[in-house]
Image (cartoon, rainbow, N blue to C red):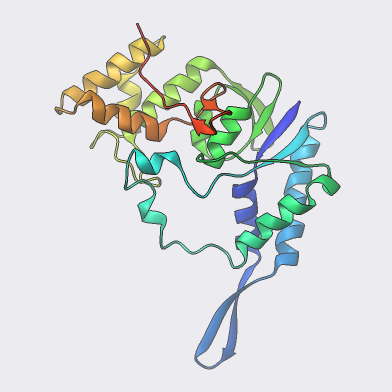
Length: 246
């Protein structure tokens, strides 16, 4: 059994916490990231995760630099282009990968998909996903969050996914249904027990504002965290989401 770890997130937090401002003279300042501190912090975090799931083998999961969603919604994550990563972040990723075996870790990465997708694609019964991102709650299975392992049922995961289709995600820069927030999305899906019901309710909300099904599908494909069976390992490409068949 595997403990699928969102290594990108935990490494980013560790590196950000190890970054300091340095003044070289009166007018010259730089950022310095103490990689020794970042590595120690990251290993401590992984140690805590292992302690919570001692029978599972940790797998450090990373995403590709390219996401298939860029071809679906060109503005996807365009708001992040100028966001600065901690100094030497790529080198820290290399350190995780190169030293994984000696620390009892495995590493996983797949072409054309993000780390969240890899977590969902690789999940198998009995595994546990260790991640903080709420988007992962749209993947059914066992999740380690805030030190506790809890199960996300398929119904809960589907509701989370369709709510995201309605609200969009400002962090990932796809709009969803303009003006539809979490409260309205939850209300729209109230009482739905099947995917077909959820999809029909989502389309009903979009049609009120004259959006086409093609547009709604584009938002759903941005929102969809890929699940087991939604990636073609032979072709090394994602299997795009389609509306449920009645």
